[in-house]
Amino acid sequence: MTLVRATGNGASNLIAEIEQRKRAFQRKDVGQTYRKNAEFYQPKKNHALDELEELLLGNKEKENDSPEVSAAVKEFQQLEKNKSMLDIKGPSMPVQTIGGPTPEETIELLEEVRSAALASDEPSPNELRVAASATAKIQTVQSQISLNQEATRQVEVEAKRQRENEAAVSNRSVQSDFQSPKIPSENLENLQKRRFKEQAIAKYSLQVHMKKYGFTDQQPSFFLIA
Image (cartoon, rainbow, N blue to C red; front, top):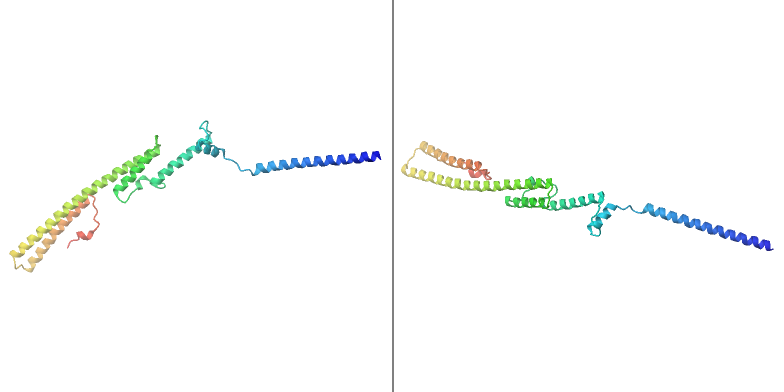
């Protein structure tokens, strides 16, 4: 009986030990499986972006930046610079295409573009080219304004001269009518042709001066010959 009890206790202990080892192996397998899943499903971190974010927030001193961080910083600065330029010029708008409703407003826009291009302490070659193009366009617009003002003045002078010539022709015609109350039809026709010719010469002279000073006639009917 004593041998049976000993054998029975030994079997129980053996079974308990086996169960304990089995549970230990199961816990080990579960732990390894969890770690593998965590490593597999964990999102990859972009260390360059993390360092850039810390740097921009002031949580990290700018020391010994990695090439990735330096490149990210330069890209961020370039994007900010391009954004500020787009607020003025619009997307990829060449300087030569900038124009406002009036020449004066065009000059104001070009001056803003030039100031933005030269805003940095050390402008890049491209920024210097933009500033130079804006300056050249400003000078061109200013020349056009001066030319238009001179053309307008010349038009006013010629218009006044034309009115005086027409008045003189009309006065001569009236005097001729009073002096010759009875004019043959043939002479009357010649007199009308002479009047039309003098008026045409005066109006043609005005058009020549307008074209000479770069002024474009927007109302051709004004210069039609009777």
